[in-house]
Image 1 (cartoon, rainbow over the protein chains, first blue to last red):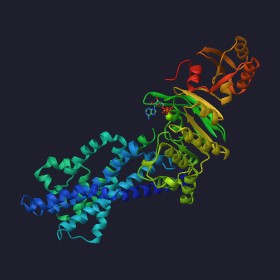
Image 2 (tube, rainbow over the protein chains, first blue to last red; image 1 turned 180 degrees about the horizontal axis):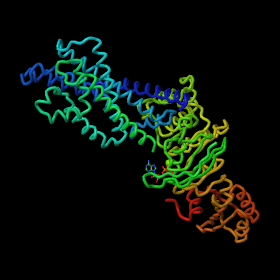
Image 3 (cartoon, chains in turn brown, orange; image 1 turned 120 degrees about the vertical axis):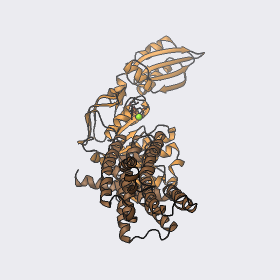
Image 4 (cartoon, each protein chain N blue to C red; image 1 turned 90 degrees about the vertical axis):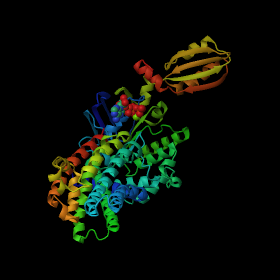
Length: 264
Length: 309
Ligand SMILES: Nc1ncnc2c1ncn2[C@@H]1O[C@H](COP(=O)(O)OP(=O)(O)OP(=O)(O)O)[C@@H](O)[C@H]1O
Ligand SMILES: [Mg+2]
């Protein structure tokens, strides 16, 4: 690819990214509800209500919050891309117009992934902010920590947006939402979200290996390594390696599925 | 300008294109005519890089559509058959996104210029969902022109339009031709192909079954018009005399209380004045005259010996 073509492709990607951001802002109300709604309920029930009723220990908040923040980076990025792409191919059809522009399918796929990553980061940041307000004094971390967290959010966004791209390009909307449900549920509950990995090897080894298999685990543990290092099992570096492997897999899958759908 | 050689396309075992070859010269309007499922959109899709050919090659200005899709896309404008407008944006925003994506200089003024050209300035702030079929088509045409492409693909540009809107699109297309643009146009309508195209390829079941200028197709008897005349009465000499014209294939006389004469000809324009002259010479009077262009149906029956499916 010559420089000229790279420039065309980049130009088109920027224009399409602007369009996607514009639409995101235009539908901001619904988007925010989608992004923070679900995590907010988890925080309310498991973080506030159950500890209040003495059903859960108050210390559980420290375990819960990093998990929920991680989960929201996943749902924020994965859902937006999967639903966006799936619906676009079938109903809105904006994607067909974008395919006509001088852009490579790889660049277009990357643009969709970056959009999804953005939503994942927004989601993680908002949910973290809400948690800090809901549970003041529970977490103390420096601005540098937030920079590290930001990297984890980016990694999560890229990985799960790629997975979203793979799903959204592979299924028609009628089945897509079931497939998303089926793929997200184990991730949400077995991705070390509601429990820390550190307790498992001794108490439930089988679950430990299952959890290690779930990509979200590396985000949850990575977030714990920064927010609550005392209960983290994996160090940040292992988390980045783990999520990196999943990113490569999902990205290749996503790109392959998108190309197959875009060019008949 | 456009060279297509032995294109074959299978969709999971279904043969959509079967060894299609043709070329289009600069400044030409090339028509692809054929029934539903003939493979027109598939062919256009390959040329616009949206469909991957199973085998064969296609080049636009020497650029291979498979090897360098980006350069091809930069060169062409496309009015797709299946609407591809962004329903989350209004008309103007739709245009603006595409202007920026193509790297058009001064995108805003270019968009306004094109909106004015197709007469959509007033409605540019409306969402796409509020557009009528004709307005959507106009917007698609304007969008295809955004980067002033040399080559334009129009896949059934007049589908579902009322006669007035259809003529407006035709005028537009003829203006592009005056500007020296090369076009490939697909259609179901013989009249459209006849009026607009320099050359026509008739497709059926993934194959080009006939190719040539509309004149040539007419002269070869593929395009046959029916001239219907209503008279009070008629004499056998008149019928015989009409039947002697070179272009006339058949003359039928139908009695309906009055006399109806059906003349099947390859050149209605030339024959009509001659026929009237003969009738007048015999002291007869024509009450009504109607000339019907040959339909795609006629062409098909002629070419394939079977009716359109
Ligand atoms: N994406 C696709 N997947 C599978 N088959 C397809 C696909 N697109 C087209 N076909 C098939 O290929 C054949 C040619 O279709 P195509 O759309 O090219 O025809 P067409 O001449 O444009 O028809 P129409 O006049 O209805 O637009 C048809 O049999 C159609 O069913
Ligand atoms: Mg078609």
